[in-house]
Length: 224
Image (cartoon, rainbow, N blue to C red; front, top):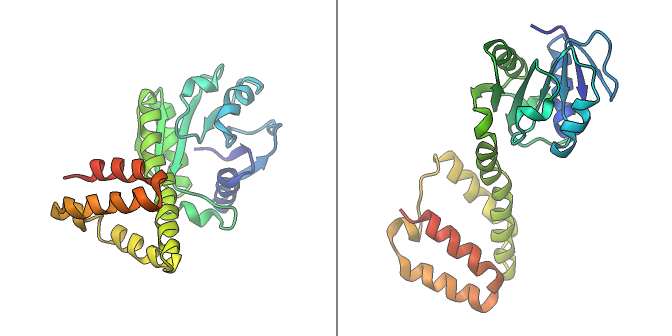
């Protein structure tokens, strides 16, 4: 569908995306000044910069961004536009294989644009699903809860293990197995053992009072 793509942004997403497109045999350029023959421009810049960068580009080629929360209006004045957001955490230490098998949220305003968004997602190795433009912020909240907050939970659990002299790494197999088990809930809340939950809160009040609101909120959200 596209033979030449210009990628703006060389961060974690931009690097992986450009490398994958090159693997697929596309002609890929990068930098702030798009090649004259680029059929598609992909913006892999911070959310706050998307509108400014898009506004400074010549209208003509198709344009897309890879932000999870940003609405398509940020790509104005371009009308041939869409979005593909890899629902995956990316790192510079790894290559385009990070995209393999991940899901990708696609948004567009016309059937033609949606078809192109789906093509780009599949070319990147993603499994595309459609998200309405008006729902992008709520969708991205889900991504943050499932990805970013997992880091928070790991760090909090590791901190408490370190306080009692246990290996911080001991929590990782538990977290991994929870995912492998399809997020089957076990433990005191699943059993309705609120006495133990109250004991946890009492211990946190004494030793780590800053974590009490977090534990309380999570316990309430976890309650069957």
